[in-house]
Length: 86
Image (cartoon, rainbow, N blue to C red; front, top):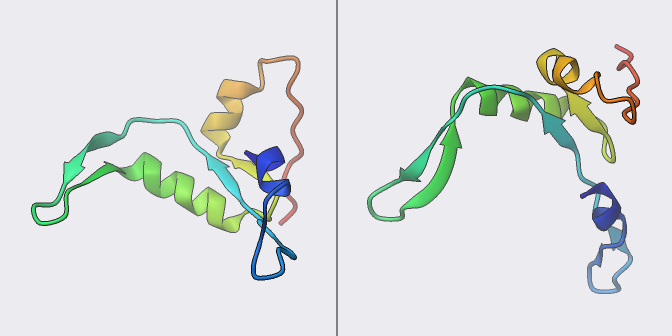
């Protein structure tokens, strides 16, 4: 996603770049179609809220992991992580 976002230009002159933030958390979610007049597929629950908070506090172009997600991913030798400075 980050690589693709770097290649996207937009605006009248196509001179604006797309900056995205990614947040990752691990846990259970509730999924389903919510709404009567305008039904939409949605994910809800604490996991979704926690992921959103990690995403919103991250920097554009970075992936922010929760402690739980970090514990799940750190065992892969090809992964490298940097602790966020407060």
